[in-house]
Length: 169
Length: 143
Image (cartoon, rainbow over all chains, first blue to last red; front, side, top):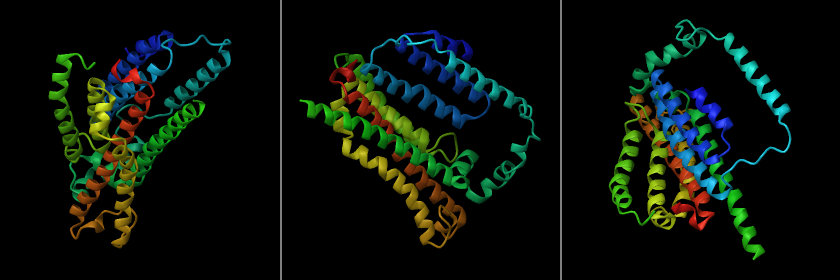
């Protein structure tokens, strides 16, 4: 089903439809994540992917024309690059351990310690929160800084534009 | 969309509950799914919803640009401040165990403030990006 939506997004030339399809894709992804028992990630996907980014893209769509422009040349080279990158990624998945394999390296490194000790050390029943805010506090600080940088970037870009408009008048 | 009575009434009813749900996700993140990031997005979505129905100027009156812009930086500062507090109390950077005599409640305190910082920055940035995009065009906010 997600493949169908993704194909429709590629084929579709009306950007409004593409944005809506993107929201649908995000919701499907969120359902897939719920099925994988990753509720925290599913919540993020539903609120950020389907909610905020759809609204922001629709807001951006107001500022541009609603239809995708015809490409100038035949995009063979980008197509080849995408297929090659996709092929390498698929090849990479062949080396992964089987799905829900309890002996996979990722489940034997620090994960058991988190699951066994998180409640005792932090007193937080939700292991995801304990890992995110406590054990991996540096990572989350970096993520927050990334969000901060994104906000500053948008302010810098769009403010500049406004000042230029005023100069022109 | 200011002319639609049903939308206005429904928005007025729903927006407080959206904000309440954001706070629930924020403070219940220790026990259930959720946390600062999700809560920040939900809170921003509530304000954006308000802006879509009542227009951008109304939303800007409720949450002025100055508040949003200071929030962007304040959240990161709160987060980094937790780390500095850990340093001042004799621990490592972002070490929560020293924040309270009892290590477990120290962890609680650290996680609480860190999540608060994430919440402030994420909601402010989302809102600011929306304000920026919607503010480019006068008609953009009621279409």
